Amino acid sequence: MSTIETDIPARLDRLPWSRFHLLLVVALGITWVLDGLEVTIVGSMGPMLQNKQALGLTATQIGTLASAYVAGAVAGALLFGWLTDRFGRRLIFNITLGVYVVGVLLSACSWNAWSLGAFRVLTGLGIGGEYAAINSAIDEMIPARLRGRIDLIVNGSYWGGAALGAAATLLLLSGSLLPPDIGWRLGFGVGGILGLGVLMLRRFVPESPRWLVTHGREQQAEATVAEVERRVSESGGGKLPPIPPDKLTIHPRKVFGFGLIFRAMLGQYRARAFLVLTLMIAQAFLFNAVFFTYGLVLTSAYHVKPGLIGAFILPLALGNLLGPILLGHLFDTVGRRRMIAGTYCGAGLLLAWIAIFFVASAAASSAYLTVSEIFPLETRALAIALFYALGTLIGGVAAPALFGHLIGAGVREVAWGYAAAAVLMLFAGVVEAFMGIDAEGKSLEDIAEPLSA
Image (cartoon, one colour):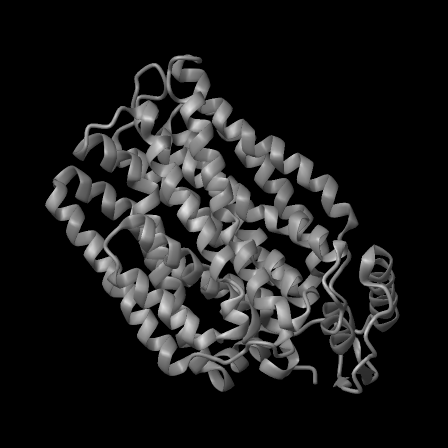
């Protein structure tokens, strides 16, 4: 393809905040709400699923179900991450949401441990695919000066779903309103209904112009940017700021092979790869260990009634939600390196769980922010998928099964598991302090030059 000289990145980064950006965040960021809803409802319904009137599962089977969901998310991230870089953000984030809706509705119809495990894998497949497509699309459309706080709020919205799931379990799993075999099925149905509504919203989200131009579709990219500028201007932006003189020279390709991508990630960007992997492993271990098995800890160690588990998860979810919202702007002002290192180390040192997750939620969200902005555009979705997959396989898949075993062994053994999670968070914070990237306020192309540049 012929060389393209473009000012598209500069035009997108100069735009003021508008209703268009709000629509983008709501339509795409709802993925995290759905994921939070899934994890919380499943974590809360663990004791209910042990009821013989439901599925009569054992504690080990419940821990395995959590691992099945996470394993599906890993596979989905890798598969759809590659497809997102190959076929575009918009096509894939609609497909992955459809896969999620099918999986969660089938989960509600499960009849034994094996069927529920299979449908949890399918649900995870859709959610994992969403991660790569959504984070890529949002980063490439949000102005550079706002990217940090918006990314944190979007990723932190997971806990809005968790809070919703915790509140829903108080009604659906209490046993006072619905029989045990009905309440948990309706819990899965909530996610399916929300997903169908979001599919309608996504009709108004365009393809990423940055992706279009690197794949040789310059005319479509220009038309998309012009439409975005019109929508921003009409929605209250008024006269737009002048276009900066910065232009980028692109040598577009239809396909960027795995060899080119992995040479960049393991060669020029190998230090960044180590940084991201460390951040992802630490947060995946902490969050999956705690929240997938929290219901079992409460019932076995503290003798909390299964129907009241949501009341204990709700304040933790709210602390997680408020962290990215209240701390997010500091990642654009104080800076990425200081804030990411500080939140990881803070989560490792604090003792009160609500305080831990207030900063740990911002830390975990910043891991996704980091991986989505420090690699070249052509590898963005695959990089998100790859490091999410590696971090989750190493830190996330093992954690629920491990803690399920520790819960059966006794409270002291569970405490050692939490101590290991704290050490991992502290280590990740130190790595960030020394190797972090000062990406605040910078264009994506200044942080990592496109491979096609």
